Amino acid sequence: MSPRAPVNFLKSPLPIILFISLLFFPLSPFSAFHFQAFAATYYVDATNGNDSNSGFYPETSWKILA
Image (tube, rainbow, N blue to C red):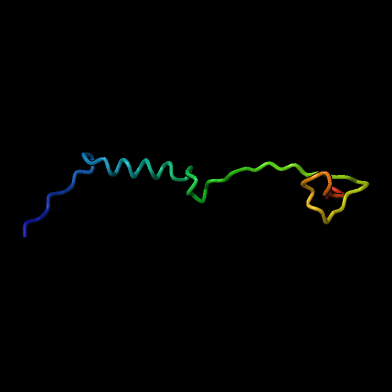
């Protein structure tokens, strides 16, 4: 059995593609490091509010902010 010739990685595009993929994977939506920010509006009514409400709508407002 004859020995195999060494592979020249500089002539193959695969290592370059893998390297670039690893650089950009943390920015992809499949990565655990990808975070999205969601905005929400909460309603507070000191007179008619209830702290057991969700606070997402004026009809279901909180009584206190804390």
